[in-house]
Length: 445
Length: 69
Image (cartoon, rainbow over the protein chains, first blue to last red):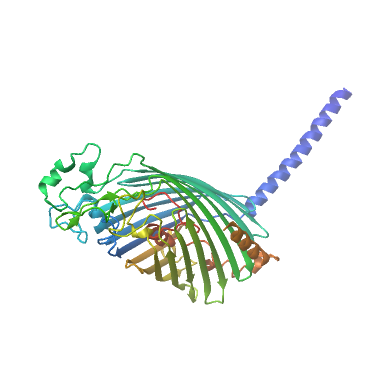
């Protein structure tokens, strides 16, 4: 009897203690739920779009000589969904539709007029569509001092497919004054190589000069056209990146960050449809178009290192200063410096103007030379002016309208902000481009 | 390069002896003080990655996803 009573007493004590702990734990959890601010309060949707145009006279498709005219239209939608107080899923989907005079000259012999590197051809390569889908999942710790993300991406265009995945970890400390992020990404890409039209008969099963192209058109200049050409066997391109970002609040009005990115690329790093002309080989032509002596050949490895810094200063209620600098170096011999300054100007509580200036310069890749400057004895060669030595100035102007009360709405979409931006970019080598972009941010309620 | 980065982090850390409290972050929390890039920046970062050899350390992609180098 005494043993039974003791057992009952022990059970009672056990359940009492368990009960107290349970209630305490529940209170703690509900307290956390009650006071924990959600990482993202509502679903947000961004509709973004851009229109890009450029022109120049150093097209890589025609060996560094020819029009670089190109236009590109890119509508994109970004949806951020709060899954709970700590987790956010972001879906980013977009397409990019471009038309390009230079890439139309992958096949300049369309029969509509004399083939010419400065004239567009009506071939299939004059336009293409690039589609992209990117999903990012982020999780924040209860105290919001740790953030984990994982991302997955797919991108596809006619001659290129990309699969990517990665993740990051962010740690904040020192009253959230100091932040360190480490991120890693892997891209596993595959080319579907498209070669210049006149080189295709010299591929694996081609008929060389017996091809119909050369009976349809008469070769002038060197009639014994014999290019240096073989199809690429390795069609993959892998990129591995590791990045570090350290940011620090310096004063009540100033904060800065330093970033370091290391990127290793391997595989097919050449662009298969970019022609090269050798100065030691006699020129061959069809109509006004010079036939390729070869296609670009670049090493199958590249190591890139980029280090950059940002410094933002809140000058007063009207002006903010946003400075940026980056140094870049790779093992192809390219070094570059980028510097920019943006000065947001606040006009009242709703409008902000964004004038900015950016300067960029780079040295040439070891394998770059211009039109007819390479010799056929070289192992690597390219006449892509994107890998040449140049400097560029960029001027841009933007305007933002923000309504924190989201008064304007379409059904359950409440508009939070509108952004518009125009930029003008000019290289000292002659390329000029314009970019107009716009974005509308909605909150779903 | 690594030495310069370590020096940079050291210089930045020197400024941060006393932490700015949450209630003192009115200016720091201004949307224009964000250290990262903005959503519209993706378009210019994208065309820079095509037209310039350098990439990375700017919040944009560092490779993959397009035929650009």
